Length: 85
Image (spheres, helix red, strand yellow):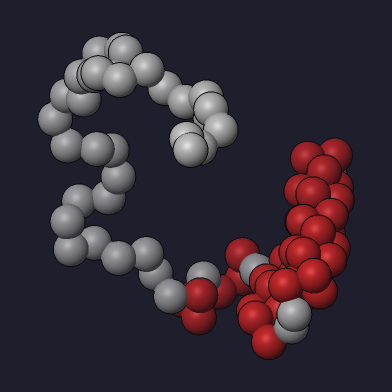
């Protein structure tokens, strides 16, 4: 018995130009600054949303999704209010 047909990419090489050189990003060995060094650029609503996502780790998967959606909405509204200012 064969498995049901599942569509997927055709066999062979991927279309498009081959990757050229190293991927973009920071140079090797460079790490982003820790959050503590950001200083005055912090926003309380963003900090709360990030902390809520960190706290969601202990929740069940269904509750995690709800927490992530709430954090996303908070971040979206915060960014929209910054753009309007």
